[in-house]
Length: 302
Ligand SMILES: NC(=O)c1ccc[n+]([C@@H]2O[C@H](COP(=O)([O-])OP(=O)(O)OC[C@H]3O[C@@H](n4cnc5c(N)ncnc54)[C@H](OP(=O)(O)O)[C@@H]3O)[C@@H](O)[C@H]2O)c1
Image (cartoon, rainbow, N blue to C red):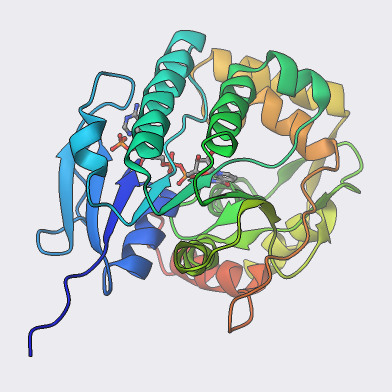
C-alpha cells in the first residue's frame, strides 16, 4: 500500500530565523516544506526543505506557489529597516494573501507581534505595516490564525542570549527604569509546536501567546545573572534616557536594542498570558538560561 503524500507547508520567511529554525524542526517529519526567503541556510537541507530563493518585497508568482498548499505560514519581518523596505515587504505579503484567498488555501497562519503603545502603533513602520498585513489576513474569509508571541527565546535569539553574553563580558546590564514592568518569554520551539497545532486545527482569529511565567523585567534579568553565577549589577537609567541611548546606539550602527523596543518593554504590554493547548508544559525561561549559560561558560560563545 502506498503512503499518502505529505501535506505542503509554504513557509514564507524560511527556516533561517529564530522562529523559522524551530518551525523546520517541528514540521519536517510530517510536512513537505516549501520555503521562500533570500539567504541560503544550513538547516534547510535537501530532502527536508525545498528552498525557493526570493525577496518577498519583489514580484513573485504566488499563484503557482500556493497551488496545492495545505498550510501557509508567514513569519518574515524586519526588526529594523527603512520605511520603504517595510512598505515593499508589506506589499509582497499582501500579494501573497490575495493569492491565498483566490486559491482558497485551507489554512493560513501568520506570526505577528503583540499590542504596542498607541503612538508606536500609529507611527512606526514596523508596527503600522505589520497591522495592515494582519488586517488583510483577517479580511480574507479564509481559515486563518494569527499568533502574537511575546518575547521569544532560543539558541541564537537576539535578546536573552545576547544579554547573557553581555553579562559574561561586562558583568553588568542597563536597567530601564525600575524594571517593574512584565514579560512572559516564550520558547521559539513552543511557538513552533503551537503553530503545528494551529496548522491542524480549525480555530479562527488572533491569539496572544506568552510563556509559562510572567516575570517582572527586573526578576528576569536577576535570573540571567544567576544563570552565570554572578551577582546582579545594574547601570540604572530613566526610561526616556534608555530610549535615547538605544537610539544613539542604533545610529552608530548597533543592532543590540532599538528605542522602540525599550519603549515597548517599559510600557508593560508584554506580560502576555501563556499559550494554552500544547500537550506538554511550556518551557521555562530558567531551563533555557541554564543551558545557554553552560554553553557560554564552556567557551562556546556563539
Ligand atoms: N523574535 C521575537 O522575540 C519575536 C517576538 C514576537 C514576534 N516575532 C515575530 O516573529 C516572526 C519571526 O521572528 P524571528 O525572530 O524568527 O525573525 P528573524 O530571525 O529575523 O527571521 C525572519 C526571517 O524572515 C526572512 N525575511 C525577512 N525579510 C525577508 C524578505 N524581504 N524576503 C524574504 N524573506 C525575508 C529572513 O530570511 P532571509 O534573510 O533568508 O530572507 C529571516 O530568516 C517575525 O514576524 C517577528 O515579527 C518575533
